[in-house]
Image (cartoon, rainbow, N blue to C red):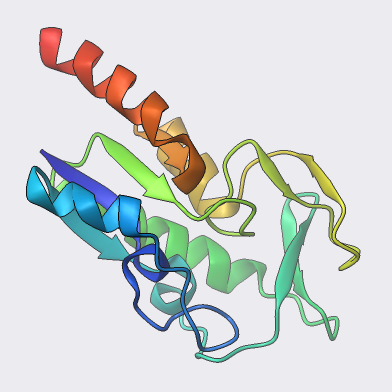
Length: 151
């Protein structure tokens, strides 16, 4: 099966700070699945490293106040195209990210406060029927994958 994955979780240095969020448990999926790496923020035209950003309602702002909503939307659309081209029906995305967060994101104050919601890319993927989980919820992916295989 092909699974869309936040590139930073696979060890690619595309995180806003220039680093990564490598997770061995995500990498271990390579034994049985094809992982398709994506970084919506880079696909949207943002550099690495970059000023951190957070969601404020339906918009995304950097810590220094710049509106980067258009770049986040473009990256989400490009990510959706990749998912569709590669026939990915599920995704493992970086939790709490303004692009990839699923179910919980930062509130836009840059004070570490979490609220319910989805990042720009996670929301778009879900709207198009792609099952999204964060890296700490791989067990939910396995349950969902089993249901999809029975169809």
